[in-house]
Image 1 (cartoon, rainbow, N blue to C red):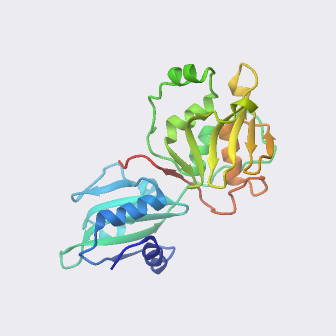
Image 2: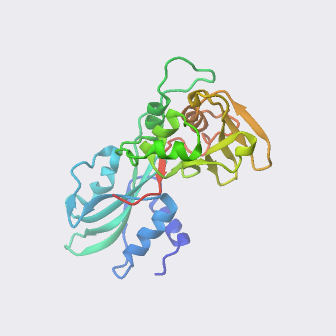
Image 3: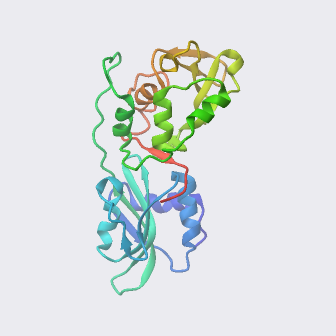
Length: 267
């Protein structure tokens, strides 16, 4: 069997949306399959290695993928994708033979607190974003040298953005909204710094006016050059894009459950 992304799509369709698994041909290049899934879903989390299960694995980190195999999983890597876990690796079958497997399981994510259209008050939008995405991993980039970055850019940066980068690292919300690891400056002559973008070539920016970056409003510059202002900061903007079906740039219709696709090295 020659594995391509189309092959993977067909196999996942056979497994369906619920909890299911299949053994794959023994001659399968498992590393290649892992690479295909990584290209599709981002960096995986290692659940089992050489028969030893990571003791931190729980329901929020893909434990449901291991249920069909009891203690027979030998290697398992997991990806979060909306309301589903996807996993591949090897497990012993009922005859004790170690074979490649592909497995899917339902992913439970706590119901996010509703975001009202004009919600205000003392809200920690970064904590809200963690909950919306079901993020349980440790900070991915806790040691960013922001002093060096800000010195090079010639400006301080919003604190919620810095927390986003430190927390999530390199990747994309719902595999679509890419978080820049430092602002792009290509629109600086227009007073804009770009903190995120999408494959549709929309740029999510700040209007970098004033000495207090925590008061900079978000501005979206669309692929056709239109500029739309939003009276909020970056983390709040992402929360609303993910959950508000009436937001001009909503992603709420694509998935009922949201996640962050991490592009870094697997753990």
